[in-house]
Length: 317
Image 1 (cartoon, rainbow, N blue to C red):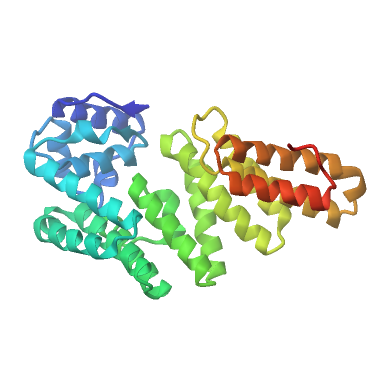
Image 2: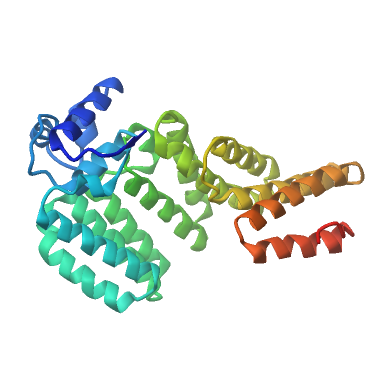
């Protein structure tokens, strides 16, 4: 469920208390790395002077998606929110000089506000290091530093034991993607497996189904590069299954295309290509129509060209 229209902080605290007790999560486990147990107790009791970024992280660790605008409590809090959005926008637009200037300002006013703000600062520095052509190893080190601010003593082999916010999960996924770039394949694969275990273990939480397609694409690509087509198909099908019923189409085209490619590769290895061309053709066409629907015309045209060359298919006008 999405936590919407909660402008009364007492209601936010009550929601956190309700979900925490429903999932039988202790206060110390939920707030570890984010705040102290007494601070969490105050939040659950309806304290009105709590940082919205902290509230957002707590709700996300409980698997709930808050409406950011409804968590703004003070003028100062609103200033910080605006500054974070400005930094994110500039990084997205690759305006790294402006982003760095804004980040320096943010660090001056927010660095003492708690671990969650320091995580945002270090995470932004990692993205800026990458944007400015820094070494991928330095980017990975900054991401790992960022995650340890709110997950003290973070260990990749213990991911399933944690309760992670959206930001924390995305940082870990960012680490995996950079490890793949740095050809740290074995480590990347190990962390991917742990992330999948986490998402399976916390399958009732909203972010699990939203992240699965993205993780499935990363894992599928990695396994396909290693010619482990059975494992790739397993992850691809899982990603597609998790996306069923969702209104989001993110990564669906990629998953459909990868399913077609992996199936095609398997059928050729099994020497079943002659009897499986229609099956593979249907899978490629499914990917084609998803990309067309999402207006990714370049991807659609590439599929069309491939089908015309490899399958002598002329049915797409």
